[in-house]
Length: 273
Image (cartoon, rainbow, N blue to C red; front, top):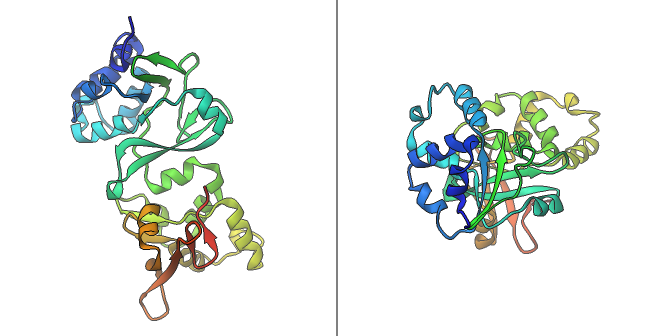
């Protein structure tokens, strides 16, 4: 007899808290994850839930608002079957979860398989926990609950953004604090190579050589208020949008985007794939 994802979780005593959470959350998640799917579920262990509760000052699952609990759980659900071999084949990258983020966009999850299988640089698949088959998908048992990420959390999770996170911490204006709030924000996130080119082009030996007020302005020129997806930009084609950086006249700086050949900003920076 083949068991669905919920039944599979019910049959594992280490996932009893997950089952309780699915039953308590908004959205009838038990019925959804008992449906046809297919789904890939990252299933936190009981110990993972205990850590999550302690880290967020909850004494029990019942202290978590049921709408928030639903989104946290959906942040562990990917539509389609994603076996560990598929993740390993890609090495690292992003997958969309079923949790809803800013602008009614699905929240993304970063995975990295350079040392096991890790999600958002926090949750790892436990030994023997990968590729648990169910009739409507696959379960990967993990050792942490994956919290709903801010844009800063996403940058911290991906080692290619280590220069960006260092810059955010060094710049004037508590940009880490600002970008950790609800927003919404659209952040054009330069990778480490882009930062290296910026430093070289401007004769800086390191980020520490960049004046912190100038660094803040440069970084804010990569932040747009609101949630703007690449689809939104493609539909618009080309044009200007204001960033969060201040111009000399007190207005906000503008950035030009063009989607004739990918998504390009100010005729120079392109969104990578």
